[in-house]
Image (tube, rainbow over all chains, first blue to last red; front, side):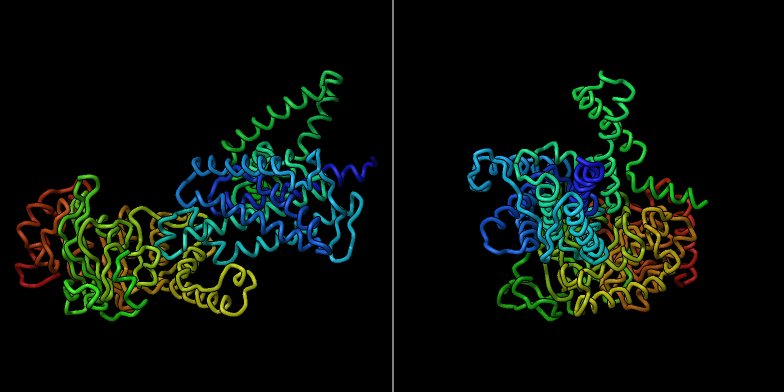
Length: 309
Length: 308
């Protein structure tokens, strides 16, 4: 594998997919204040929905498949968001775990979803957007970049509308929000819907542009936590934070592996790498929670201000 | 929600359909802006408010005073539908409710502030205020993102009203500041602005001046009176500072242990023996000097045959 295709295939494309997933979760958790641990489940719904729409509906343009995948994830998101009408904080987080386990179970149990493929792992079709086929490492990256840019711009737009302000109002003071007339229940479900839509699209990118296979096991609880960590490290309620956080999470293991094998040579095998990754990441999260609760985005702002002085 | 509020036409200030509730008394003849009828509220056996009747005329500034735990905030919470009273009804604009629908409060023409700051800390001053026009919005989120047609009209209307309220309350200079970073007195003022931008007929202020410095209190009194004078709002406020209360309000309702013990003009209330015994007599640590000063001056003024 050449250096360029490694850069795009192994770093930039997953970086975009994870950024988009983190952006979706950030909308729900950072802006609307509803904690979720089921992010990977909504990614899985998106990925499998896109696969099935693509497979079963003849001649459906892939861009429509992506939209339908997002909508499918939104419907599932609304369903698992229903507990948010009664539950808050940790209790809500635990109930979103149900989404994580249920979706993964359903996708493994009913092999209709993976077209009765015995391995449960299916090959993704080529990426075609508006008649252009995005092939090769760079092509898949550009495909992901196009989708992520479009969704990010739409999200920024949404946050500047009344609906975006409603999310923050519900997060910051639910009673005051209700008193001024914010439809609190509808706002929470809308946050789940839009967030899941974005996360579902991120799932499509993860499966189709990065892995090029669709399998349930990639969308496990570890993935959900990984995206939550991206949001925390990047900064809650920050769009830029989602990208900063994802960059750190994707690049950090690579840097660690290089530095580790440089310093320790053959002692630094994959087991040690895996372990040290977890340790350093854990320390990093604790450090961020204590020292910079508003994440890399806030750190970045301060650096910029410092630089200007 | 009460059955009457369901059957009555939406937002029409006319009398509710009689036959549905034949035994119900007519609302207060003088078209009170707000009327409480025999309100009783308890929390698991502890009575917070009992048998409160109260009627507030349009354009009146009404203070509710009383020692801590007298049930003042509970009463505001009943009026805004945060609590459902065990008994009694709340009349707003000719319709009565067993529990006021909080979600529709703004559409009923009622806005409120909270005892402890209840701002949206992550939003700027301007966004906090403009968000309170949410009750007047009809466009859905997709229309809002596209930003044309009615979404645009609603957005421009909300922004224009927010601008007007900000210049009314001298907030224009800090419009882009995130409210969480503002000093306390200014946050209180932003909360008032958020209530005023809804153009309510009834404004409920739960301790609008608690914890404020004297200049801030003076500003706030001025703003509350101006809100009444310029917009004709009916104001109901809870306040501990007796000096402020007596200067600002048209009428004062005094609560003690959840019961109403007096109701009248500031001068009448000050002269009321039950009030002197129950409230003015029991001096709070913080209010001591002000109380002594205000009740002293009150007696002096009334002996001269006038009110302030």
